Amino acid sequence: MRGRSLARLAVAAMLAATTLAIGGSPASAAPAGRVNDPACVPGEAHPNPVVLLHGLGANRYEDLNVLQGWLAGRGYCTFAETYGAYPGFPLVGGLRPIADSAPDIGAYIRQVQDWTGAERVDVVGHSEGGFQSLYVTKTQGVADLVGAVVAIAPPTHGTSFGGLHTLARTSGADEGVDGALGIFGCPACGDLVVGGPAVQTLEDGPIAQPGVDYTVITSRNDRLVTPTETSFVREPGVVNRYVQDFCPFDPVGHIGEAYDTNVWNMVANGLEGTPDRRFVCTAGLPG
Image (cartoon, rainbow, N blue to C red; front, top):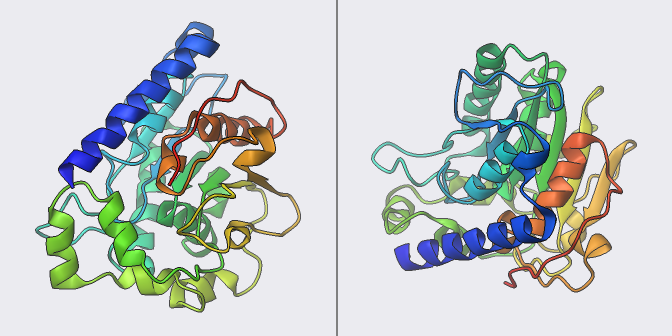
C-alpha cells in the first residue's frame, strides 16, 4: 500500500513538472500563496482562500496535496485537514458517516475564514471530498461563507459501484487503512451508494445554494463513481464538465483525477470564473 502511495506521488510530481515546463511557473505570473498557513493573507487576484477536501480513505497529506501546492503557486492561500478519521487511525480519513464529518468540515471553513479575514472561502473536493463540498455547503449553515465549490468526481447522486471498500484501500495512505476498516468498517461507503442516507439528504431539495458558484468535473473513464453522469448537478447556474470536453484523449480515471494537470486547470477555471478557458492538455493517469 505504501509503495502504491509513493508511486502516485512520484507520478504527480512528474505531472506537475510537465505542467511547469509547458506553461511556465504559475508563481512567475502571480505572487506565491501558502499551504496551511493561518497567517496567509489572500491577495487581490485570489481573495478567497481555498479549503481542499480529500477522498475516501485518504488524508490531508495525500490525494489533493499536490493540487494544493499547485494552487498555492498560483497565489492562493490553501488549507486542508484530515476529516472523518477514527481515533488511533489519524491518517485514514473519510471513513466516518458523512453526517458526522460534515460539522467538522463546516467548522474548519469558519476557522479558515477567521484566520484569513476573507469574506468568502472556496471549497475544492475530490471523490467523497467532492460530495462533502456539496453536502456541507447545503447542510452546515456555511453557504453565505462559500464563494465557489469545485467538486471533482463526486458521487452526487450515489454510485452504483459496489466496491467502495476497495476505493478506500486504493486511496489510503498506508497499511492502517485495513486496520481501520477491520475495526470500524466504512459507514461513509454506505452513505455514498445510490439511496444512501447522505445521498438522500443531498437530493432533498436543490443542491446548489444561492450565491455560490458551482463547478462539477469528472471523467468519462471514471470506473468507481458510476454512471459518470451521476456526478453532475443539473441545476441552473452549475457548470458540469467532463475532462474530455477539454482534453478528448485524456484517459484519466477516478484516482488519477486528483493528480491530473488537466483537471487542475479545470479547477482553476472554476475558482477563477473562467469555465471555458482553454489550456495545453497533458497525458492523464488511467484507472
